[in-house]
Length: 156
Image (cartoon, rainbow, N blue to C red; front, side, top):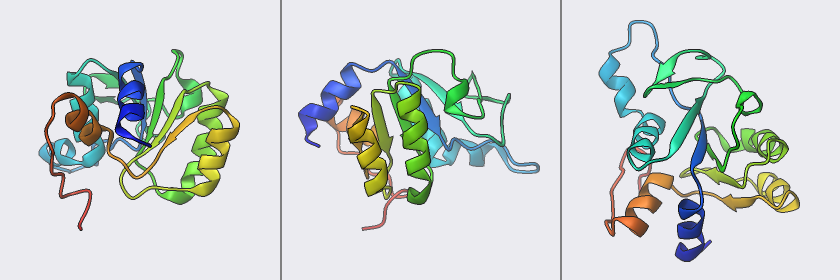
C-alpha cells in the first residue's frame, strides 16, 4: 500500500472504530492510560477531526477521550470508514468479518499486526486492507511532513 493510497484513505474517512482502546484498571494511575498506544493514537486522530469510537467489550459504557465505549463494532449506529485494530493478529479474521458486515471501507491493522485470512476477507468484501502501519504515524508523515518515532510500538 503506497503513500498516495493511504493519503486518499485518510482524506476520505471521517469515522474510525478503534478496537483495543484501553480502559482504566482498578487502582491504575490515570496517567498510565494516557500513555497506552491505542489511547495515544485515539486522542491524536480526534485532535485532527476524526470521530473515533472506542471498542472494548470489557469497558462498555465507560468514557475514553470523551467518547462512550461500545462493546462491539456491530453496535455502532453510525457508518464506519475505518476499523483500526490494536489486537493480536490471530483475532483479526473475526474482526474483518464484522467490519465487512457493518460496511467499513477500510480494515487497518496497527504495527506488528498482519493476517492473510483477514486480508482475504477484506479483498472479498471490497474493503481496503492496511496492515503493520500506525495510522497516527501515517497521518503525521503524509499531512504534517514529520517522521515520528513511537518507540513503545516497535523495536527495530
